[in-house]
Image (tube, rainbow, N blue to C red; front, side, top):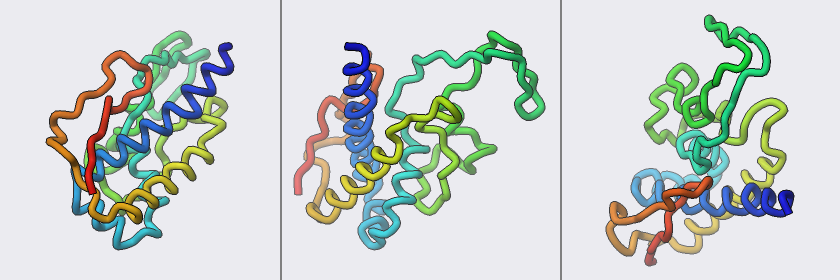
Length: 171
């Protein structure tokens, strides 16, 4: 039962919500959407940037050092909490202007899928799904636009995976 639940959440919920959050992000920035439509070959770089820029998994998973370790100029003691994935993806030392969506940035160093032995085993599939979905949506619906005020969109408040309750669009 636990494995089935994990596969549903990790294998479907995250990707489905990442697709909707990515579309929402692009709808909020029509100039970025136009740039992606003009250069569909940039979808791979765009997906990596969106993975760095967005966070669909709420930081509720504790990360604790299991042994004393030096990270940069800081010593982290065993048992001490360490940085969240969301914070790591918004580290200005790793990503210049991390709060700015930059579809031309090389964001491959993000940790949206974890890092090291704790990396998501489905990350290659998730990347392909995101690339195919965004390419298909932009190609199939060239007139895609919000069917309401984007500021009125509500998000699931208490879920582990973050995403809009709905994303009304028209084309």
